[in-house]
Image (cartoon, rainbow over all chains, first blue to last red; front, side, top):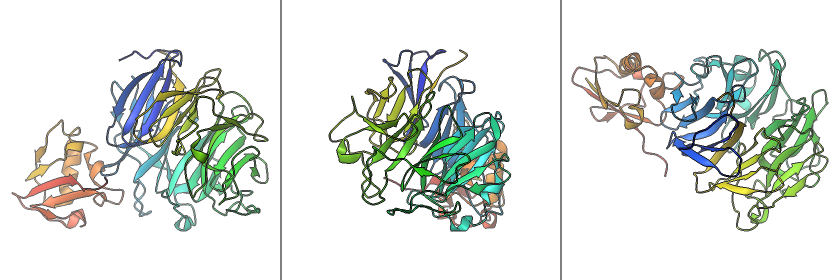
Length: 372
Length: 89
């Protein structure tokens, strides 16, 4: 097994059957480890950028429940949390799946779960506390679970500010706090109505957010892939703005349909998406794989396909199936439901195959090892 | 009584597949397992104290997972099997 050292790029690939680790010194030749937690679904795993050595994995056993495990030696030994997140007795709810694991801004850790809920740990994932103001949000009994289940799948802390956070819940909408989670408000104005030209006029009409990402240079700017289209919003804006010039448009929603969305790690206004044909056929359009990139905050998107399969690519990229590393130029990584992982070490200009024949890819994350 | 631990959870018991203990109810069985093998109880019970949805429990071959664990009474000599429900494809 190849040693993993400081400066190496590590890609964590969560799948339906465990998590795989890939590492490389030059992002040309890759070594693999795993699978770990074979048989269990890992919807999300990531190398914590705060220390550059701890990998957290949200592991869901459909039989035995979900739990967060961590390793500080790249899979040599995994430490299982003492228990997973639990809803209160009063809620009547039970956590069935972990969708997202996210480092916070205060040496803490968050998970987003199904049924939709947010939990915080201050001991590395051993124990969890419910973020009650969100988990008991008034009206949650009316939240629409959507086809994928009622899940909190996106957690966006605000860099350097422990008070602010956005979360995405399918299909309840976007929720924001600016008081460290003590109170939350909805954040959906401006999102397109499904299949219509009009947009939501108020914040509290739940929409089907698929993924959000903060701009690297200006984190007050958030990009959002919604079921009904691609949007952008800067804090202080009255509403979301639709940004779809150059993107494929689905016939059903009248907007761009897809799931994954990620910002460039350094460059302002730069983000990546992988649109699908539509909610009626969730594959890349015409079976030709492509990543789309904007470099001007969404004014225009360009299609990137050099090195990607341009025929018979009948797969989906799930909502956490694309991420960047923090190198310069940036690496971009995309995992498919048929077990391929494509990567670019050129900001997306050209692509290669990192892995294939994996189980269905649920998530991809990438980071750079520090301190070893 | 003898309690059978499923293969997937034997990391908690150091590889042991059966455990001998005394308990008057199924809830006490889970509590005793949790006491001896911290974390094991979490894998069996959901947040509301029910058996997890896809956990099968057989007491002397009778399925009882659908019942309140505190209401399932046991006697010395009973056997308790925790199993994964057959599911998926």
